[in-house]
Length: 101
Image (cartoon, rainbow, N blue to C red; front, side):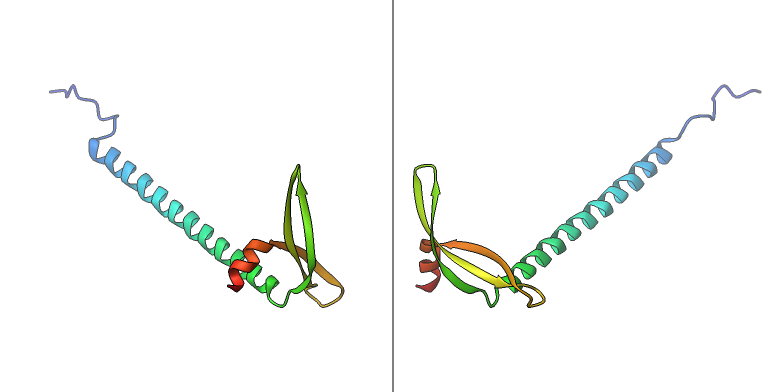
């Protein structure tokens, strides 16, 4: 007797295993991306902390944005190799007073 059922399709088990493999792969890739983002964020914070270490107070400045005025402290860092100035950054006077107090 001839069988009428065709064997060309996938079984439900094969489909479930394929979905499980895809889900596992997706989870591993997502975990790697999250770990990479955390490492990059931590490295950025460490880098910023090292750059701000040893910064010298350059003076106070007034910043005008439209009709608003704000006072800020200007800081200067040294260049990485010590040759010349590094870069400037500023901090609001209110923020600086909060850190000191």
